[in-house]
Length: 171
Figure 1 (tube, rainbow, N blue to C red):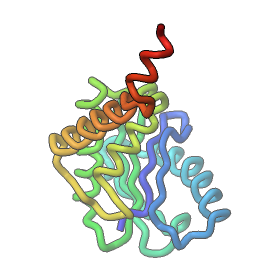
Figure 2: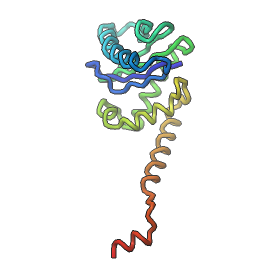
Figure 3: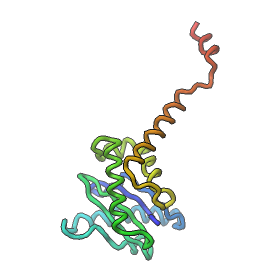
Figure 4: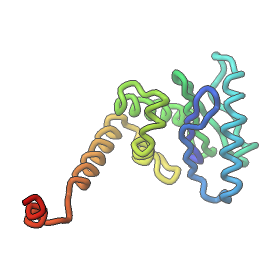
C-alpha cells in the first residue's frame, strides 16, 4: 500500500502532500507531514548523486515503511509505501507521474503544481486510489484527465434558467 505521495521543492517546502494511511490519527498525521517535509529533504540534499533513491521511513511512518524519491529540476517527488509494494515499481510510478504532468502542463514546474492544485489531484486520483495503484500508463492518464476536464467545462456551461426566461430579461 502506498502511504503517502509528496512533492516538495529544493528548499523543503511541501507543494503537494497526500496521505492514504487513514489509521494514523489526525494530530499525528499533521506532525508526520511536518516532520517528513522537514527532515527528509535534508537527507535528500546530503546524499551523493551515485547512491540509491531509497530510504527507510520507519522512524516517521511506522514499521514496515520505505521511502523512494526522485529529483527533477527544482522538485523532489516522494512516495512512502509498505513492504507489499516493489521499490523499483514505486520509482517507476514517480516517473509515470512526472511524465503525465509534463504532458498536461508542457514541462511541469513548481508554479504549475502550486496554481493547478485541483488538476494535480485529479491526475493523482486517476493514478492512485486509496493507496492502490490504478493506472500506470501516462497516455491513459492524460486521456482520463482530458475527459474529466471536458465534462467539468460542459457541466459549468449548463444553466438552470430556461432560455425563454433569460431572453425575457434581455428585452
